[in-house]
Length: 95
Image (cartoon, rainbow, N blue to C red; front, side):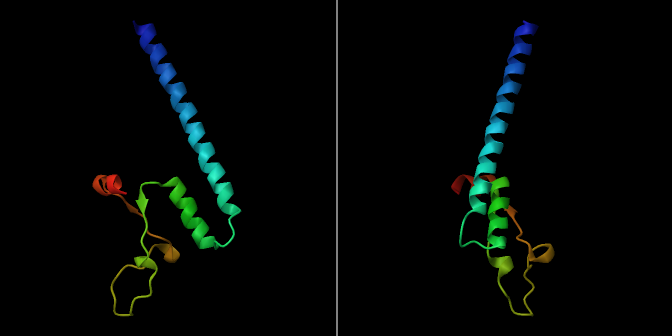
């Protein structure tokens, strides 16, 4: 019985490794495709690369707009980098 359970665990681990390798290859292929895309600047490419690696994030244009000086809205992260927002389980199911 223990041998059967150990075998099942080993098979599950092997399946997980195969799945992770497939997904890593998919991301690498998409990143190479993005690099060859004309019409996108380096900021757009960086955002798309981030989105590939963090599928559960949502992006808005709000941090990148130019509000008036008296506006107290956040303006993004360090260097004006995009501020990804994790999706809640409800909004993730609606996306």
